[in-house]
Length: 226
Length: 64
Length: 233
Image 1 (cartoon, each protein chain N blue to C red):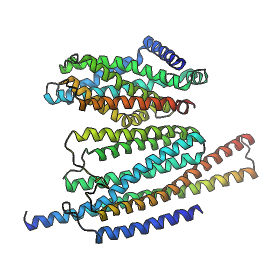
Image 2 (cartoon, each protein chain N blue to C red; image 1 turned 180 degrees about the horizontal axis):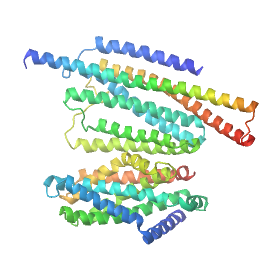
Image 3 (tube, chains in turn yellow, green, blue; image 1 turned 30 degrees about the vertical axis):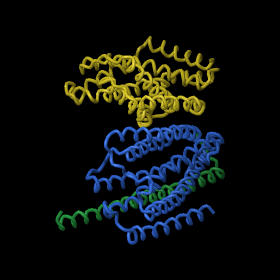
Image 4 (cartoon, one colour; image 1 turned 60 degrees about the vertical axis):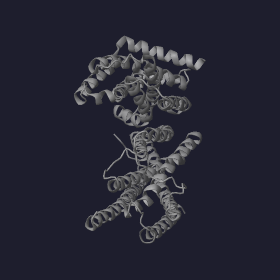
């Protein structure tokens, strides 16, 4: 589809820029590691209780690091009026938004992979035991965060207090997604027993992703036209 | 439970019920007061701006 | 005309509430297990329902604004959200006070209280966003988008937390009205108070949205004054 191809073009451009400078990745990656370090002081890594809440710690790190990535997403287009250029081009608003979301998604996945490795070392957790299910949860959860991050990155791009407003707006909205991701991650890092009850959370993830991606695409014109 | 404890608990129960209703009224009252103040301020501002426009129409201010 | 409507609504709501309070305190009996404190339910539940009704009405108004472009809808949406927020705060504070007596703790991560808390955070963000944008059209558009996102999210949150918290032992705070496990007189009182709250809420919304309209008028007059000034100078 043309729209998807355009979105991928936007994503490729952004990722190319990012790969050259690596500023978002460095900032978000460093931030994630520092937070994990701080957590190791707050929650004793050796204790049993900490292993039980490992999923929660990880997703908090991802959510915080994500905010750094999303802030840059549209802000990067502000100098030299690149944003206006993008908006007045033939690019449809949904494609632009989708492209930004894909960029967020890829960048955040990289940060998550890094965090997972560091986390495994700090907390002595063997996260590879149920790797593919974990990857699935990470993908679904990260997509939800990315699309919301893209929407609100666009919404707040022209505000004075952008860096403050973005987290304030997105974190309450992300609570159901984070809850589901945390539950599933806790299970997969622990016993790995995915029962019918637990799959309910996977359903929440999927519903969240579908509903908000659809809504984001439907309201893209509203959000992006300035 | 002995009657004394029961009556103390009952009194506290009653007390908190009043706190609850009081809290509800206070919150709504505070909001209504803030609405009233905002309304007064807006009215004054509207009059000021209207007066400003009317006066500008009569004597154009020359800015050097 | 509008002033008269507001005044009448406020008076009717006030009288209704006064009458209800009389019945709540002097006519209805104590709850067998909870004692007098349970009477808080007559404010707590109607406040909760009014809050949520407000969020859905704001959703509808936001959609109406986006499709029509008429600022009247934006004013109403913002006002409804603000008033709904007030009622949600009343809901939470009362819930907390009630919890203190019944369970001995100021807060519990019960499904309903938590959902209301999150919705308060989301819609506080809405009000913050409005305050951060000066340009009226952009403000209207972006807050409409946030209102739609927020309301859908509140629905998802409600259901998710219900599932989340029923896996852990959690006291059921509110009674599913119509479930047959509550005295009909009590149930009716909840509905009567709900009506009173809705009337009061409507009056507040009308006042607030009128203020929004005035604020916009001031803004456009200022722009005009600036334009005139610059033209003359």
